[in-house]
Figure 1 (cartoon, rainbow, N blue to C red):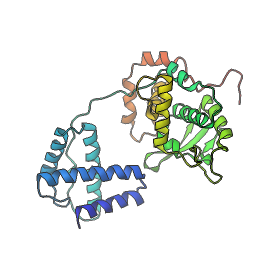
Figure 2: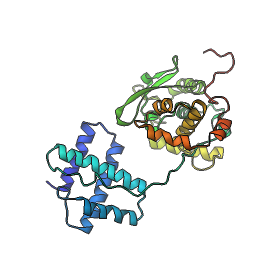
Figure 3: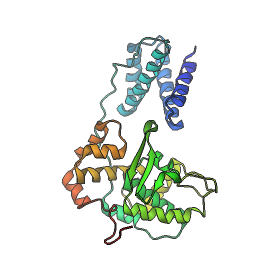
Figure 4: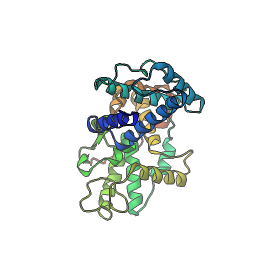
Length: 302
């Protein structure tokens, strides 16, 4: 069996058994191909006879060629999963990637937006359906800390405005219920009223494009970049920046790392711990006494 055939069998396993997304499968395919091409360039090896020495050399060469430690970490993770599959299938007994570590990655703090910047971005009056949709998406991203893939995957049936929550499907097809703040509820109500002017009659997606079909993650990113430029946001505005802003404000206000982990859908709490390195005094000043867009107006009991 050729290396390419082994990779294809592994990708099929990821698609069928683990139900990974098309984008994740694309990343696995690319990473395996890059590493294979590199060790083939250096030595005459195949996946089934590869050992740790040529693999270490290949990783070192890729690093010298400019690949970051973060990228190499991802590649090594893909390789470990690949060899775990090959071991399970009885095709090999070794896992040459098991003890190889990528170069250390500098600990970077997530970039966030201040409350004032978010107000400038989100407090916009408009009657244009696509802009109403965009504002609802950004409010929901910020209110509930969603990934963009989770946002575009939401169906109408997942949304419960009465109980102020939404069901999302995160990484590894794991479902979770997340709360929705009042500002996001208001924005979603406006979008639902406008959605019928755009959506195809049989389309179940909450967020649709101008052709009436489910919106793609790429389309969301492009629209947010445009909004960021119009609002004068420092740096490029992207969905993850709103997720980071949500997480830092939640942690600064509550100090409950486990709760923030659950809200974000992190499988490992170590992923959430990066937010503990932020300047809490500054964050609490930004956050004030509570999430600035999660409270109802005084007297509003809806």
